[in-house]
Length: 630
Image (spheres, rainbow, N blue to C red):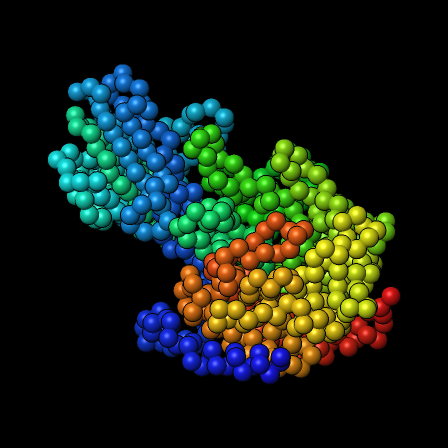
């Protein structure tokens, strides 16, 4: 079977890799400069990181994390009921100019004197209180200093005689407007700010980012998209959106559209540190500082409570990390038109131990690069959180899954214990011990490692996924990732790689690689890349190289690819087992892209160094015999 893997991978790679993507996409991001596959993958990460910050976006897609200002203020001319004459719908998904959605505006006057004006305010009343109140100049706005124009795309449902005023300002900043007679074709319009000297300061506190006035005795329907100021904000704290969603009815394209998972972003930080160009280090600092900010500015933190525990959560909002009004880390979620409310994502509000540990690993590696103690302090705070809230001293020991927000909005302790989470804890605690010489971190590392060793099945040569109650193994599912992770973390349990080959390898639809588990319903590219890295530890370089080539084939040929990043799975709805309720889809994924880069750079993300360097250093651990199996 191993020879067949190599032959099929080579055949696919050599025959098809250059066919699917045009040279414009794969080779010309910067003039005539040629890029290899890993350069393209880094370009993808850079583009995701900057997609909301190369300019200042008022609206690009519904519920986009990059949107600023909110359509929350309005005025009208007659006594007509507002909702009867006017509709402003931001999630219209038919024939949009770009992205997955656009704005549909409908106006039907009931009297000759009717007119309507809508204002995009900062902040929105929903950010301030539960009352329907907008910022008519009482609160700060956004700093748009340096912007000279706002552009937007618009069209009418048919050519019409009515003219519409589009504007910026009208509170503090004098109104800057244009009058437009829309056609039935998408057209870009520009509002030149043309500021007087006395107005420059007012642009630093812009309350009304966009608005329009409809004054017509005839019904009007028109559409808006890509409302953008020409101001870069690339110095802002931010995370990368985990998945590139598309326009579809599938749940992830709605639910995941504005989420930045901290595990994925920890991987990206480590990928930048694996290559370490000047631009990589600049980007790594932004992500590291974003982790530090999120830890210190939790959404539930009471600034008057000095005893509040530092907290990192599973995910954050894309776009600006810092809430412009509250000075808190922004959380993702979905807007419900039915309830007229924004619902935060409960999983992102929760905290899983493995995600915290990976964030610790990324910040430890960044600290080792820059030697600034503020990052090590953040790591210790996260480690103390794990010890305080999740330590389990019964049964197998180890650290439980974390804390979660349940369906009723209550914070509860997770009872299950994950093998992979404890692998993560072991390395993060052990690395902390080496940096601080605090023996307590070493003791905690061994506490996590004891659980990992207890989950090894010496008969079938694989790990159990963990325990639901802390005293019995969970034998329902056998995920792939524990096995390459154990090799990378411990330089041991190599038999798990053979088990993975026999039970998780799959060939389907012209692609080959490893599934998440043993049901073999599709290829999980993140796990395939993890195996490619682990093979380097055991000197199976040819296997690693050929897995890399299959991933690069997918980079160029998978559905929904951009010829740069790596999609999460070879199919939509790749399952993760009976015990897990999440699935993977054919969507570009920064986590899969980062693991591919670890394989290309022969880099061990657990220990923050190349595989060869780590193998030399890991021999020291064996002298102390701490890996002795039970």
